[in-house]
Image (cartoon, rainbow, N blue to C red; front, side, top):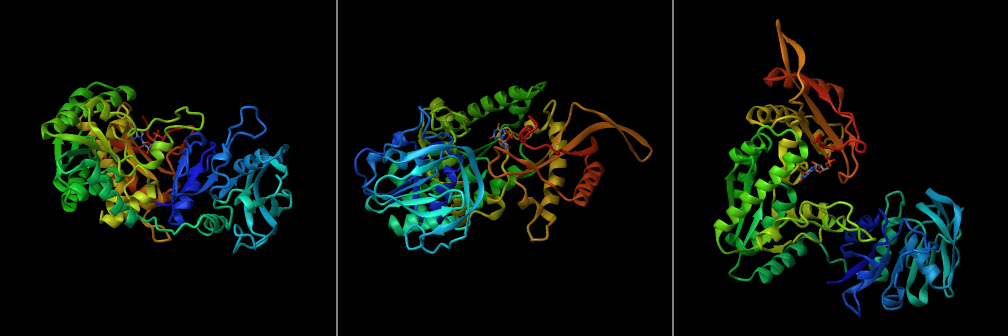
Length: 515
Ligand code: XMP
């Protein structure tokens, strides 16, 4: 399959480059420069060098190893990538002292160049760099400029190399997608055949080949988008030889376990529900400390899951819904892990099962597209993220049947209202936020009055955030009349609650979950 390699020098927008390339219907892969394949690989049709927080003038600057691909396949350098090409080719890159940051306009652009075909002069581009190219290498010429940056883009036609000092992948660069499409389709010759539909048939045949005709596969199901899409793909490949194990820890949203199981049944996934709520709640009794709650839930989950998987007999594979960002975020350019993901590592080593991860190359929106194509209902595909330890991390205090009931009831009122209220563009409030839920401050009691009675009950905190990746988040500016309606409804209907607060903290410095 044709593919573009994106060499990652640590830019925050590397994944965005990959997303944009995929939008052209072209498969692409992000790699560290040191991981570039040795020898010719006919499937590689082009290489893109990302930006970087580093400077090519630093002693410890990252090397691009240009000799391995320059002259063999077309190359596009973006920002640091362009400067790397210029510096390594004998040009000069200097520190400007001033960080060139923000919007700029192209004052000149050679639209006869294949990279800039169809673009217009005076279009807005986005700059973010502290260095600039002063002299180009031999054989290179300028193809675009801005008022402040004479060499905004250059070409070395003989070697089929291009460099841009702005960022075509970000939305502030108005014609960035045109430029990237020119490179990927026009220059590299991508046929644009990558799509959710042909991914499905290729993935199904890969799974069949990998698992063979006898082995059995298990998967942990939770109702999340990734694990559900993964399960359906595997089930399409091997049918009943897949068993989904749904460990019900009793900490799901109200009725959610029933709803999710029903959807799996309708989709024809062989799923086994294990009601382990007694065990989880028993082990959580008296525990207040958030990390201890997580440890207990993680340990119980592994034990219950392993026991059930062993009981199935003959299971040799564990399917997991690991997606591409899980893998690339789990390592950085310098090799240090910044965030370890729930799906990467964990279960398999302990269980001696081999891993089957059919979604490992997909971005989240591609997973949704695949799910849609496979017929998974929108209600499941559009679900907000939900933490593995469930409502336990939304109960500040002890987790027991009563505190779980209270938070479930309040959460249900909040989530239903978010689905029912719509904003002016027709979307439900639910669809405008990244994630929402209710938090019970079980250890806090405040005074209230209901009718003529004094009450002394716990507060519920409503949390709703907007985000693109959960790494940062802003509190959602929900309409005040909506919040007022939800607040009255909760205090009226949920026994044990006499006060409702709305969390107006962003992440950082707060986190999305309270625990
Ligand atoms: P925080 O609270 O760290 O949450 O801002 C970021 C995102 O991760 C989810 N989250 C978890 N997911 N196990 C999970 O599977 C966990 O222990 C966990 N803790 C937080 C959270 O819901 C949000 O989407």
